[in-house]
Image 1 (cartoon, rainbow, N blue to C red):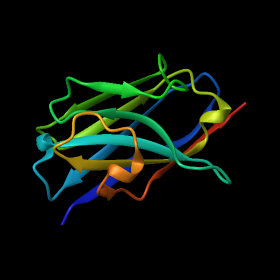
Image 2 (tube, rainbow, N blue to C red):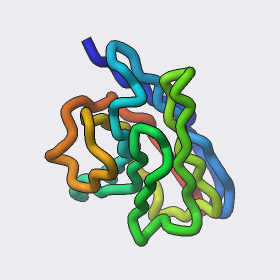
Image 3 (cartoon, helix red, strand yellow):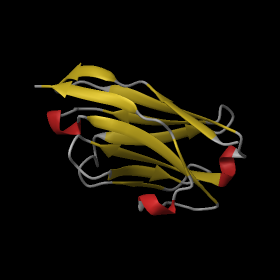
Length: 124
């Protein structure tokens, strides 16, 4: 059974940084692309970034490009989202997701498994 568990969210002031983690189990981690999505109250789920199974390919939403960095440690079955220069509009629940055999996938409907999410709140 595939499980994804996010951590690292919290309350931070604008301009601050957070590193989100997503620990995966029940899968051959390096064979799966990982994605991060976020959803703010009253808004649709939004793509944040995605990283291929080997970690060489990455894609980011324009809204976070230059402020966020994806990485993964396949030995630890964990993917990381480093977020810098956070803005109030980054406030949302952040979810990680995974899909087998893909490279970089930006559309949420392609993902097979999702975590419960971690709350990020950025105060102004």
